[in-house]
Image (cartoon, rainbow, N blue to C red; front, side, top):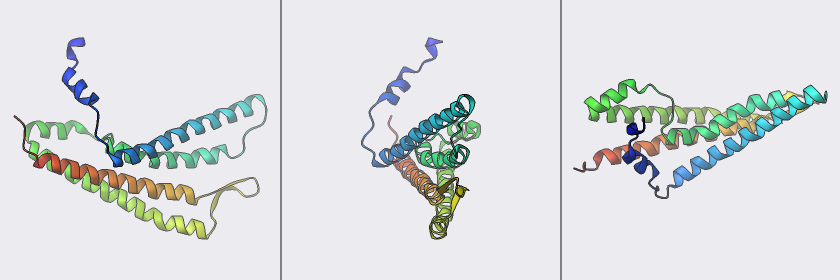
Length: 185
């Protein structure tokens, strides 16, 4: 089992990376999403304890949790894309990288351009919703008991879509630059 470890790959992965402002921005958004997840987990646990042992549930936990999931996903999607961790089926592209590397690079770049377009469409479609929910003072919850405005969650969808599109476009530039670089022997 220990013979299967590729030490060169481990050393390459451990190499320090140059300052990358895009990575810094996307990782900061993902960190906010992670902290939010922890806070949501604490809120849910407090609600369970309150319901089960104190007969005092926390009002609005279900609504907060439902909307938080969307916010958390969109805060973390840019870093997920930038770190090349979006879910995909690698069985075909891995074979193409081994047999026809040029075609595989073209397919990868087309995939990333399509991803950037989709993320851009998501951000663009969320934009009017932010302004409409602000103008209409839209909220979710039960009026008089627990309400939260919807515009921050719509704004997070717009922010996450923009971050995802940025991540895909920067990766396209990295891949094009890498493919134009002469191969080392």
